[in-house]
Length: 272
Image 1 (cartoon, rainbow, N blue to C red):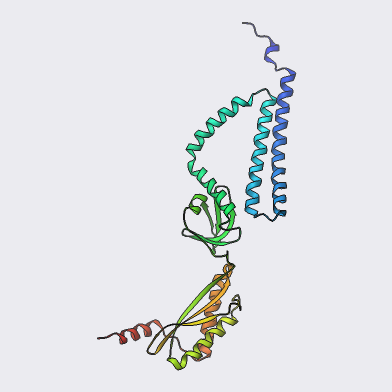
Image 2: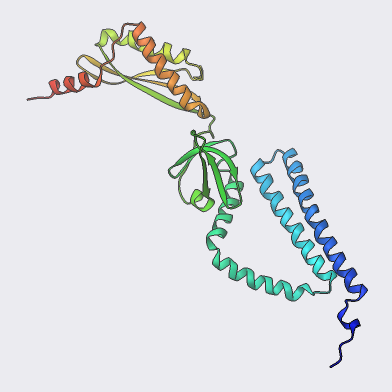
């Protein structure tokens, strides 16, 4: 069998087709990035949730890339009908092998569309608590108060209870103290606690801080101060509130019962 040099050298038309296909791939890659950026800007102007905007823009980018790949294959004479069939079969096999990833993808769609939480919300998912930094296609990223990055598979997010601290805007916290005294000392102690709540930074004045008598014994009173504050400021606000409670009780001459006194007091009250 004789093979000529002309048979080994690709024709000019073939070289042009390959060059065109490469050009289409490069243009498609660049175009997909532009499409992503333009889609993010356009969706952001429509006041769409930022996480959902990025998610939809990513889908658009992959569609552009897929269309570019098909166009480049057609340019070099590869019929995509059979290729699509092969890809579909391979996709089925890969889908069966990556059931967990597909579950995470579906859960990501549910999170974005049902808006269980948004970027910047403080949430508790399972045993993890933090600020939502990113809602991805497969995972959700939280940042803890210690600046730890927590990456949670989306399927784990939607499979259990989600506690959203930020959804209502404010939280109500409580500080409970046991003070020495009887009924005549109740008003003085309650006023001191209300003053502590009203002067604490981060505590809202509407609703106002409130004090409840939650329990009582002979010689001791259990008082609970409740106050409202922003969820993201919880740790700092509660610290400031406890400090203010101690200061106001001391200024009012109201004594706290320490744990030893409380235990002895309870034992003395028990029948012999």
